[in-house]
Image (tube, rainbow over all chains, first blue to last red; front, side, top):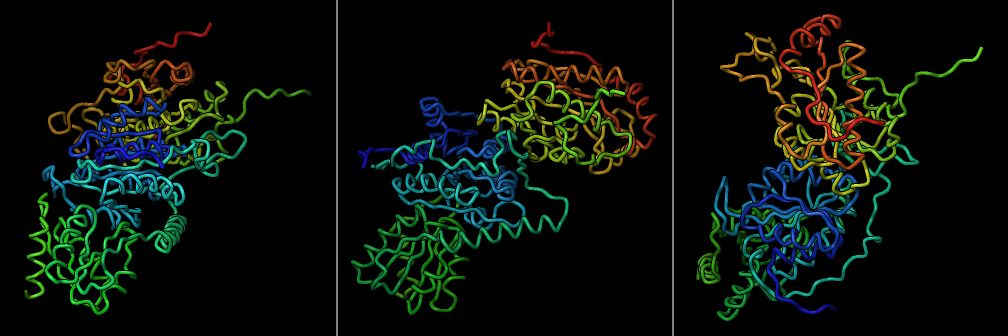
Length: 353
Length: 251
């Protein structure tokens, strides 16, 4: 194990990417994630990597597409409006089955919104985001250490499934400093080379084509069905979540990312007041752990979904819980972060206390 | 009787039949690009980036590794490829809707960065694939499906001179505008395309050729008239010439 160091969330993600073997970073400035490209602009030259500040998020995602075509590990980061601009390219990458790691440090929206922490991009992240039938693997860290670990994992998942992987954070995770332990540097020679499909020059082999396109609907349908099979595989294997003090709980808070951190304080305070509360925290927002949440919800007094949006994950929570328990929601919008007291008071009112 | 093979299909073209309309000069330009790649001996190290438009199927026609970029984004895709693999040669093949309308940001910044990529820009003054709408390069007074009364400067602006804009970018190592409506011009275009590739092969910077091309189908005239129409109407608007040449001549 390496030593523990105190780092900011955005920089921790950057360093984890470097250690995962990422040597290509393309990005465009947008608050609140600028520390990540800034870190990469300093770090990439130190490891013979490439950092390029682009002319727009539209260009960024297409540079990521091009780099990913060569089979090399590549990354970008942005914040909400920037991620909206990237959606066409993300859809192309999903169809062309190109691995890459994308980071969205979500801010208040819709529109220009503000630059405060938000979870308003949950739907965009988990239901596709761009046009057409596709899903992204979506990872939601709730600590800086987890941001490191999930970034490292994201590159492996992207390579394994030939798919863009999205890390969704917010300004709290991005700006917060916490002690972390970084993983070892990956030996670049051991990374997947994708020799069976990547564009590296048709030298001594047939030409390779990487496209998100076929003019024949029957061929395109086959491409779609191949994606569907992949998504099923991911759903079967990659669901990740955390269960916190659920053993004896009769109230379950559902929350992800920053809100899940706050919810842990709520759990502690509620227990001091004699309310047995636990936390169910999805780590993969897609695939969502419906089955496990359903199992947990059986016989519970209340499932209490808390988010920094108008109730987006709430839809998935309800799909999971069905009619096993009542589901209530509380959220703050526009970049407002709820306090533990505030959440506990609402929870108590929902319980009639 | 001994026969000598003096002309054959370039290695860098596949056996696929072109999807272009009769009389369209895309096919000539494809062949020139393929001949140049053959002559430079770089086919096995070349990546092609096709655009959105009539030449979207170029990824089938060039016998190199290939992809299709989102509309207008070919220079960004090519940038990503070249930055990932500087040892490979990357070219984009783009029409005027793709490059001169939706893709202006990408081409200007790729040129300005001096990306070591090559761009073949085919200007036929119209959108072909979508059925003959106005392009930024459409001539004033020219009728298209979206300028049924003719392009008006007041409503639609003026024909966009791409080569003259790109000329100002300091990262450009080779830049020319040519045409392919006569055999002599075909040869001149080939020389220009070769230099645009050499700019990359020699690591000098960005190389681009704007090629004036015909679209008989959407211009609504026969192929021979289209060759004349190009000469009489497009050349006065889009002067031919070599704007930048840091490659020099072979000795």
